[in-house]
Image (cartoon, rainbow, N blue to C red; front, side):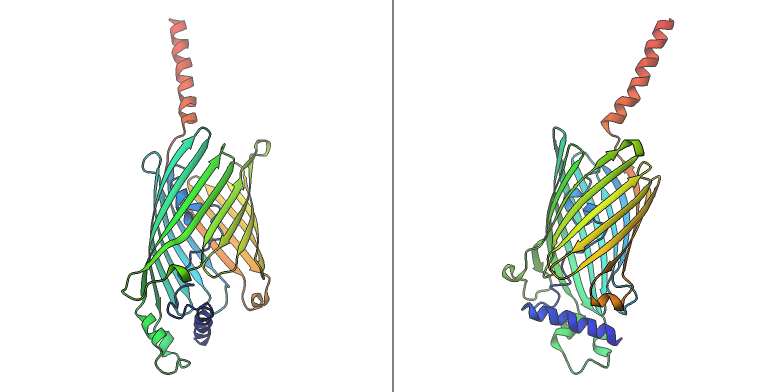
Amino acid sequence: MKSKIIFFIAFVGCIFTKNYAQDFAIAHKSAAIYNHSHLNPYLTNPAHTGFEERGNILFNYRNLWAGFPGAPNTLTFALNAAPVSNMGLGGILQIDNFGVANRFIGQGNYAYNFRSGANRFSLGLAGKYIQYSLDNEAITDPLHQGPDVLINDALNGESFFAADLGFWAEFSNKYRFGLSLPHLVETRLDGAVPVTDEKRPVAFTAFLGSVWNVESYRMKIEPSIVLRKISDVPFGTDLNMVAKMIDDRLIAGFTYSFGPSWHRILFLGGVRIEKLKFYYSYDQSYYDFQSFNNGSHEVTLSYDLFSKPSPKMKKSEEVPMEKNELMDETKK
């Protein structure tokens, strides 16, 4: 119990140092960070919604600093689909717990996709309902002394609306680029003083990657780099390397992340069984707090609902039929 309160006090303290005393939830309202976002980009970039022209449902669980009482954990459910040509629709439900702090996000994604020769582009927009609240343990704990207006108001929760903007591009089915601007628009919904644009830090997530086919080994190599600046979190860089083997049935990956004063490594493994995909990753940071926890774990389970057949597949299916018709005519 005491560790949860310590977490919350540290959390609020960081907010005060950034002159956010009037909005204690500013850091917790920042966009979520997933270790598997380069495998499912629509989690952080609405422009990727429906980009692969197939629908799927996804479950993701991230446990940060496992083994430490009150450590953050995130539970995510997502739906991604392309109901018609050139359009993607999706939804995300996210639940965060961080000590006595809680966050719920309900999000809807829309994307418009278009082609230019061998290149594809997409623009996406996401609307979010965000609710932030504290557990009753924040005031029942013995460490809490006297009335605290900030904590008491937080027990009733704060509601916000936010909008994200995204762009995604794929060149010659090989090179990929994405840029998302989370919480580009943000406003308070419960009648309190709204968040001012002057005090909200600029946030963005940029992705640059490629796909290299090694046909002789039935393998794909996908290197990528992610640049991230979220809320008041220090600027971070992820260097990713993913290998998809045996026609994407086995997945192995490695990530090295670093920032101004920290760095960490991540190991990823996964399998695909027909339409079902499973990913697991473990990461460990290299700073003093690592000695107090067992690293971080993330699990993703997704299932493909349907997929749109590609034009190449249709043509390949028509060729044998035409040959059979010609053979029948020659026999006659």
